[in-house]
Length: 294
Length: 295
Image 1: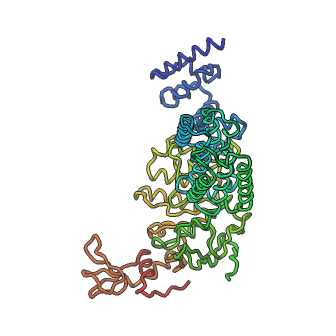
Image 2: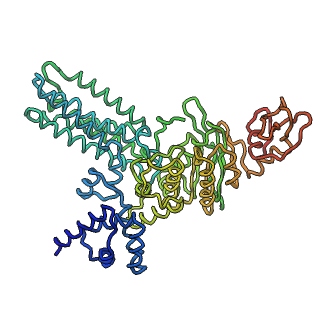
């Protein structure tokens, strides 16, 4: 019954899309709630834009029911459209409201994610084809910077069009900053992990970017409590490059950061940044005084 | 050190001794005033400190010194800031949008930012504020397809989500054509009933049309605080129409009917004409006019 009904529904939708009016019989089935699910969207879409069919629907519907039907149609048409990131978050159990707040993060826009992915996979390919003994180095240098850039474009008035409205919202503060940072970090880590698969197997060193990524993101976020996010990202980036240059022998493909001791130091930096972030949590309530401009 | 600002019945916003500096530039140099229900206009030239003052009141940034009380809470403390944000609406000078969102989606998003997490309640509130600004029929349009005036109405709708008791509007009529401006004034006048509305503008017509009270800010200092009629009265008996320009006038310009409107010192053979709020404002801000203003 359902399959045959759905098929009939498809034909009716096709007719409605061709511009034909919906027949009285279909409208009656719609009013009585007997129309197959597959036909609902097509009929509602047509009726919404067709005054004649709306009039016919009003004639066939009892007044209260008609009002209710319109209200339902309105609600369906108004329903916010959700992108892939938002749907994925809801699928993971995040509430639709929190998913909406996170999905609005500027650094989660499709263009930024695609660009970050391209950078990483290019780096991984270059590393794979290069004569370096340790191909993980290039990924180690680049991967941690991606969420840092993401933080830079997610919390400043330069990149977030709703910065001012968000700044004075009751939900603004460290919670929102952490939610958005976690989303950016999650996407960047996922992309970097996928790019790592391109590399030849080199043991745990393949994932040596993970701790620096976390540490640099936390350092940048902690700095945004006092300075503009772009400045924070730039300082972190320069510091990271300096650290890489000081601890790495590129020709030999060796870096202290790939060793257990190096990773332990990076962990300490991550913990220190997390503590700094917790101490500065109240500063996330407002625009930092240091970045004020007239 | 200034005394803490206190609100008395009818005064829902109280500001005392606010100062703010941006490096070498003084934005606010000890601003004090109180405001109650109705529309209070903040008038002043560009750079007078209006936006800085409103951003502090909107809890977007802290002052260097001074005290603020809004609805009996102190927004300069963490708890008071949250309480203020829950009862305040803010339309920034340059409201930003997600251009691909529809008007409905954007207001729904702002409602989430304002902690309306119940889906049904959020829908009702979104529809209510869109209806209040006359955008019910356009709520499905993407914001990038809306005119400047309609976008400004979306921003106003966002500001009134949650029915805030205090509404802070930073130059809401800037960039609107005359018809849109009239429509906007109607909306703001309605919103002023039963609410505190603080409205910054550099258009004296907005103040004349909307405000029961006007505060003139100039270089971070309150130069006038009182009813618009009293600001107009500053120019009484000091506005003249004549055939020629008066060299000593504070301001003088040829009008559409061919005569010269002189403010301040009259030229020879001039006719005294009724003053407007703009005349009073120009006299107040002109240092050579040396107008005595009683606070």
